[in-house]
Amino acid sequence: MQHALAGLAAIMLLGAAQGGGDVSVLTLRSADRIIDRAFMTELAGDFEGARAALRERIKQASLPEEEPGRLKLVGWMRGLNARAEAYARLGRTVQGYAQAFETLRGQGSERSELLWQRAVRDVPELQGEFEKLARVHLRMERVVGLARSDSGWSAHLAQRLHQYGVEAAPSDAPSRYEVRVYLDAADAAELMGRTRVTVESSYVLRTVQAHALEQDERVVGTFSKRRAVTRPTEDAARRFGVRRVMDDLGWALVHQIREDVLRDLAAP
Image 1: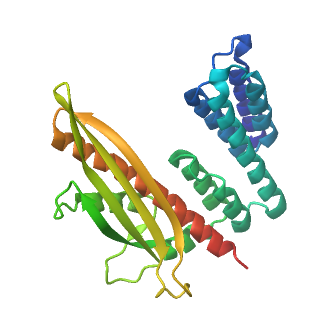
Image 2: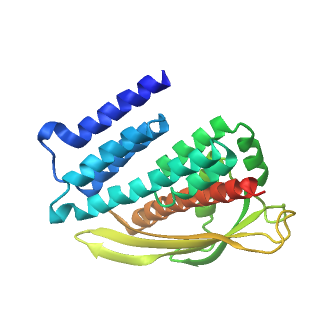
Image 3: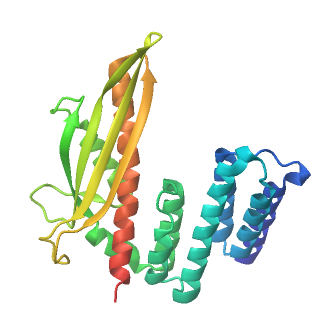
């Protein structure tokens, strides 16, 4: 059954890439769709089918305006090859998935989640080990444009993390990680009776030295995001923008913590 699904996925992917001889201009958006289909083919076990379709579409992209999309496909192919090599050398083990997971940095939450679910399926003990380690202290280092008493951002971020198995630990509870968040939502401008608010946020994710597994504090990862949101009122734009940015930060945190836990479990 798995081989049949892999073959079907490859046929669909190759057909979509070839487009029956009527290939549309490759854009960043269409490149993302091609990558999504290629990833599903890869997850079905057919790396060669995914490669063939990607190569075909890369070869067809000859217009100057197609260059950004072509480069995106080339970058994805590089990651695909790295994952295939990791599985060939290390198998579908914690070590193999630790290396594979690194290739999905910045590649989107859905793709990260799909690979994580596959890793948990192939390495059943992974989820339990992850839940033991995936605890984080949330610290707001700097807030601009929001009342200091407005703690809805932290509750929203904690809820997002909880959805994917990362727990926001109370300040007096043990935790392996600490994240320091910076948030600026002060920039607002009137536009034809509506208001555009620009929200910028970043974080630094560190380990906590007091944790039993940590000899020294170390930086696990950083992330930054900027979003501009337009709504009828400034308050509505600001709240929606902050919520969207907190979602972005939440996904980045989940991926980086998963990657760090995989790396730790894969260590000899």
